[in-house]
Structure formats: C-alpha cells, structure tokens
Image (cartoon, rainbow, N blue to C red; front, side, top):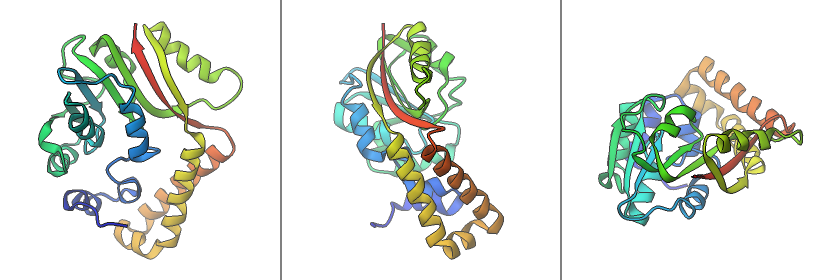
Length: 230
C-alpha cells in the first residue's frame, strides 16, 4: 500500500478514526470507483457549480474540478479536514467552505450538483439550494428489505421534486468494506490500540463489528443514487 499524502497522514495521526486510517481520502463505500460512477452521471461541465457536502478532504470536489472543469465547492464543519484537502492534489482548484450541511451559506437555487457521500443528507437544505435541473448524488445507507422501504425512500425525494436518474445497489460492497476494516483492525490490533488507546480502539472495533452484522443479516443496505431536479 503506498504511503498516504503527508496532509492525510497528519489527519490520521491527529484523529483516532478507523475510517481515516482504512478508507483514505475517498472515505465512502466503493471509494474512487463509486465517485467516478456518480461523476459520469452528475451532468457537470464548465460553468456548473458542484457542492461536496460533508466533504472531509473534498476528494469528490477535487476530482470533479479536475475532470469536468466545473466550479467545485467542498463544505465541512471541520476546518482541519478542509485545510488538509487544500494541500492534496487538485486542492487549489476547489473552494473550501467551513459550514454545517444543515445550514449552508448559499443562496436559494445556487447549486447545479449536490453530493453527499456517506455523510449527513440534509434533506431540506439540499432542496433549498438546488438549481432547476440540478442533480443530487448520494452514496448512503438505504433500506434493503423487500417490503417497500427502498420505494418509500425514492418516493420521498420524488415528492420533493426529484426524479430518479440512476440507482446502483451497494450493499454487498458495503458489507465487504466493513468486513475488511474489521479484519484489519483485529490483525493490527497492537498498532491501532497504541494509537487510539484501548477504550477507543475497542469502541471502534465494536462499531465496525455491528456494521458487519447489520449488513450480513440484511438489516441495513447501501446504494448510490442520482436524482435530477424536475
């Protein structure tokens, strides 16, 4: 495994967080591959405005700016994440904004493509800032049962004026991600326990073990969605 960029390594050293250590800058299910899948369907081009909400180090925003020429904005509540993102490749092409996804500093109908990748989906705020014809790109937990839960999830967005443009189930990939993380935390226990402290290490291991069980039992699911504003 290649050594992480120094800016990302500083975050890993500063935060006792398995998802920074094990998922890296594309810290969502599927990583770079699913970011590209969404990007191909986001409708971005020069002159369009893209928001990466809850961006961490803005990996999606940096990729979108580099590959589409759009104006990319990365917003996160943690300024240290944003500062690291500026130092990563492509960081100078992105606008960095310290903000809560539930209270974004943008005018109504200002954003052409809104992204939330395994972070809080701020339903009302995303609806407010979406421009006519905007896309909404989500990587998120989604109902996995056969009792209409997924249909209800999609219907909630359609009632708010969004039409489903693309959908890709990710539950198997998510379960694999959590299993791999659990195995790595166990395999390298002395390393992580020394870095995190025993109590924090065990708490994070329990969280990942819970995710493994929930996904393997089919109690939780994951998916990619692209909605388009009607």
